[in-house]
Length: 310
Image 1 (cartoon, rainbow, N blue to C red):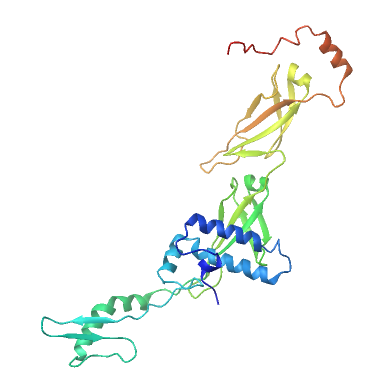
Image 2 (cartoon, rainbow, N blue to C red):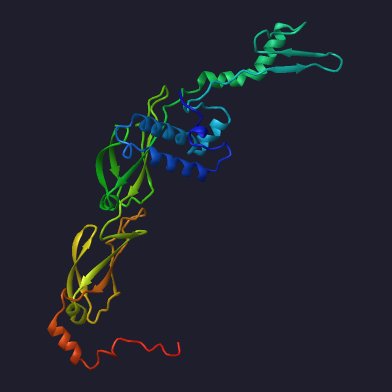
């Protein structure tokens, strides 16, 4: 039987949304099956923490829980019975009608009295109850790491989650770190239909590419000759290698723009790729280059700025 989700996450009912997210992340990381292989207790604890966050992490479901409309499992509760009291006019005294044990009409109460009260108070509620749909299954949440290139280019993956569930994921092109994918109808089963699966995505870093918004940034090495005389170099992009023109007299730090070579945009099109040039000298040195620089009379002056008085 499920426990109070506030107790599971170690929080009070007054906890903020940020405190709920923080507590969930810490506990999920602590009990994640990848960190606790073959540990049934940790696996059960991870499921319990996920179930608690499924209720408290959703503002609407949390409100329903706090009002007592859903239980610790996230299932809807039936409407509880209450007591109703009817007061007559001045001098007529008081008559009380109770739905609890031992209740019933007071002295002199007629069937019509009860009928009127139940008609007024219960009528609309009973009509709604008769036509209300059964509760759907519980939603399930997972976290998943995705390769950088799969996130920007899109991909279809079949993955096995920590609890053993296999999911077929369609990763949309341009997916960003922290986004959540929804798999409709793949959650837990319920009388009103299955719940959904929500997969929070963590995009892995890449050794070459860095994403900033919809743009991609890389650093590309060039030789001294390419920097001075210009030329063509091969630069990697998220769609494959391309040829790039390096202008004459390019310095380290020069940035070249490759239009439309970035990540796909939600509004259509794509961002750009920026290639930052970095001059790299030959490994182990080059004697001819050293002799040339020694004889180069303008080597100490050209390309510098005078900051005196700045």
